[in-house]
Image (cartoon, rainbow, N blue to C red; front, side, top):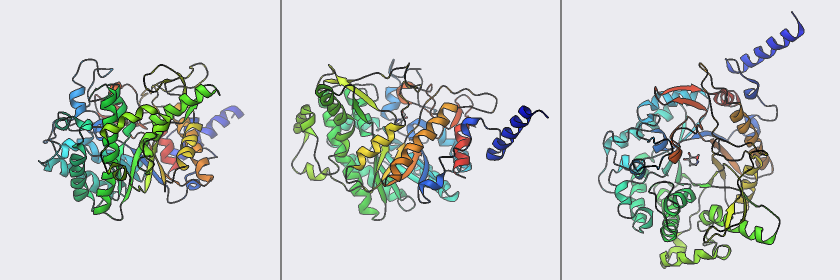
Length: 472
Ligand code: NOJ
């Protein structure tokens, strides 16, 4: 046998040993990474969200939510799709959780659909919705997967939106009732709770620029929704704690490291303003630091929504902060009203971009962790990190080399922060399987499992195989 042929065979053989199927180079083990380096108590999971995976939008008594409504409006979703079927997780969860288990993940983060449980937002209970989540939780526990519940991942009951949604201060009471209900129903088996998912995203995209449901635009709507979301964030934490003193309670924030384009005072001030609107606004009130008005003066307008005693009610001592990182932001002075700064588009020539146009820059997650570690936070858990690339199904395989490399590089950055002594205790990738990517529809595929949306057939991508080996 020729030497070159031998080498080819030998490397194919090694790959075969690693996965039980032939692997491309990208998903072979990386000598600098092993799960042991993260410690035995580290949580390895995937994150998902109800509206993005469940489907069954009008089945078994589920009420309408703001996305069900928004998707029906012309031009709101890029590929004109809806989340009505999505991954049909509502019917397929049993096999899906077995699949997750087969990839050696031990933690599963999912959100509860408020309108599946309380179709009108408050009051009337939908027992079939409760049954569904009981079955999901019980299945997880049966197969040795730890469930992590997110209470709110953007799918507000439409009937509450009809009363003003997040702009109506009554949402504190509505959310308290919902939280109380969920904790009473599921708290006997679920220890890990995440109150909100990315309040920065649902307030900015949903109430300031109208790109997400419910599609509102306006500075007052935005400021009201931020203040009420921050009050609910803390209130939710308190309610969980009052029922479950031993619960592990967090909230998940979108965290992007912001850099000025140039080292000039004007640019630095602009970066500071963007940093407030993306990061500081959602963590500092919780920590009892109030709103960062000094660095973004228009936040003074928030005053009109603040009532006596609110400053105290904004605080909650979370056990962990969920850090979700996708990109860094390079900013410069600009004309966006109020913020007077703008984002600089990443340069296609110089950087690798994901299908969302987001720059692949692994150092960014490290910088973000460092930034948040400066606050008095007990634990940081990466509750989302991942990338969409144009995947292609080839027979029974998806060779998503870019995603394999992405995860390896981002994990190295997380490890670096951990090795420097920061208490990072978990990594949940986004996401388990390709799903409904909000206003982008189904085109961007973020999963480590490929989903054929016509047949609902799942195919493990190379990145999924990589994790299966890594977590073995
Ligand atoms: C953050 C959100 O929580 C999630 O729902 C979304 O799909 C990912 N980012 C990717 O855009």
